[in-house]
Amino acid sequence: MLRLSLTFEELPILSLRTGTEVAITKQPIINPDNLKIEGFFVQDLYDKKSNLVLLIQDIREFLPNGLAINDHEVLCSPLELHRHRDIIDNNISLINKSVITISKKRLGKLSDYAVDDNSFYVQKLYINQSILKNLTGSNLILDRTQIVDITSKNIIVKDIEATVPAGSPQLA
Image (cartoon, rainbow, N blue to C red; front, side):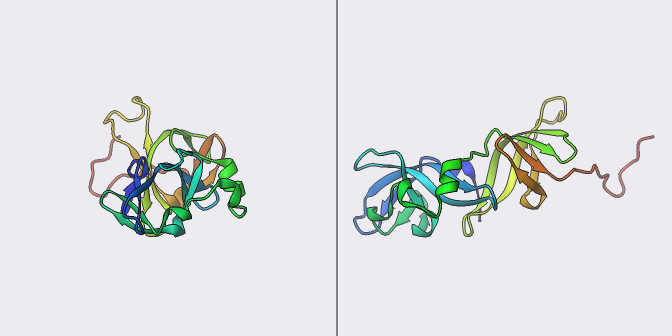
């Protein structure tokens, strides 16, 4: 099932061993190479440390009101995660990044994204366009297959071709 990125913010993390809330999610850790959420920065409710990490493989289940983990012990310091060092140090955030095409046409800013809650890959991008570009006020939605590159400032996507649905009147 696809979930919007906002549903991952401030989620309670529940320990199955103690049956209590042990932490709260703060920000996803996104791998810019494949757009996979590798984990979350969390705030520990025991020590009030806000820079602990919960890796995706340590999540047992999505509950209606949060995430379930085996125990508080799976939360770790970012310094312990040598394999994820580059991803944690980059700490990219997709929200509010400019979205441009290969031909340098600006499409707008990323307002949200949808994540598959089984694989944790970003699947859809929701882009707010300027009022002049979009008089209806709706978002432009792009699939992950249209993404070419992610830089520190921009998300670069394939050029979008305007298509006219079959049977619609043609303007001269």
